[in-house]
Length: 170
Length: 328
Image (tube, rainbow over all chains, first blue to last red; front, side, top):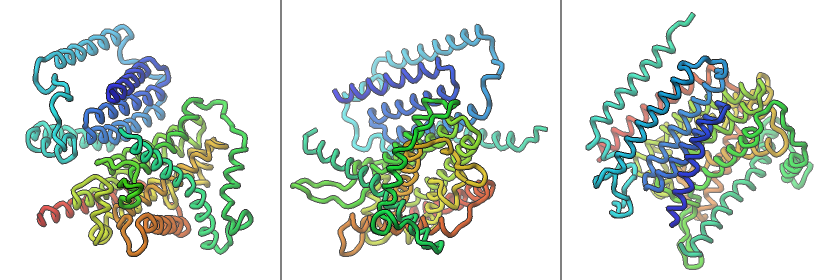
């Protein structure tokens, strides 16, 4: 009961904030509403017994990435930017991608059986589920290759950032 | 959930938050008194015995002041920003254990508001959210100096957060737990400051920078930026920033004590008393630093954080990891 209430609270706030991100005029307020979405998602992670992921969500996304985002929005005056796409094209692609993501999610949720479809309440969770130790073990055994590939991707991004920062612009 | 449990939690929340808020009064007084004597003057002495009530008088004055809203400010964020600062500071205080569990009315009561098993990550999360209070305060004022001060101090906080977080990891490796209570209990015989002295030094330096205190108080370098991000704030909004700075000081000091300086362990006296003694000594050290060192230049600050502290903390982490593995 309490869990359902909390879920409704987090999910509702997250959706409200997400709508705000899309419809608010002021870019700084949009960025902050996005922080709100991320924090509420962290709350939902905690409800799913994934405290470690929730903490990382807050530290990495809400705490670090969004601050940098906010920096950029504050320092560049976004109002004067000419948009990359015409409003019509932007709307078309926006709806297209939203539709693709929606169909994907629907498909995953509607899958019979499997881990993704099973409600967490039915099977009792192991005691250390979601703990850093359990997560680390899975990450370095079952999901080793995706993990390493992701780290290479990040390395490439770091090298790229350094190269761009070192370039003389004038 | 039974009633006794709810009462217990509520009581602990009130005690911890009440302690932090009341202690700020005395920490401010202590800072002014200690700074005064270090600079060969007396410090406050008129209000109350030894000037003890000076901070209360100042607080009352701030209450009475006119609350000024700059005409060009972003009104919503201008109101929210000081709130974010104080909320994150107080939230961080919730996971700090200030004593071993005691038995009250036949119940074992652990002396912290919440023993989450990811307490250290919770702390880092709370401090990283604290950046928003500063950067939004600077931006929402819609004025030059606050914006520059806000950008400066948030860049500083983000930079030093990294080394601060990594300096805590060796202790996590040694205890195998992210819970502050477990880390505190592991120090009954040997404080972690002995095997992890370098991590302790790095943590203390980062803690000073993280709270925007001298010699890292670039955010409010008076000679360049008037008062940094809170230039435009007056009355209780300024008081909230002031409060959160001191609450943050106490939180980072309490973390240093819990992780490196043996938490509540000590001979004869009960745990919470030892914790309090260590807290006062650590805050004295903080004030001592302020009285001793001149302010750094901004590029020195950034170079020091990224080129010295971060690599040093990474090397320390790698060495500790190897040692932990070799010892089995």
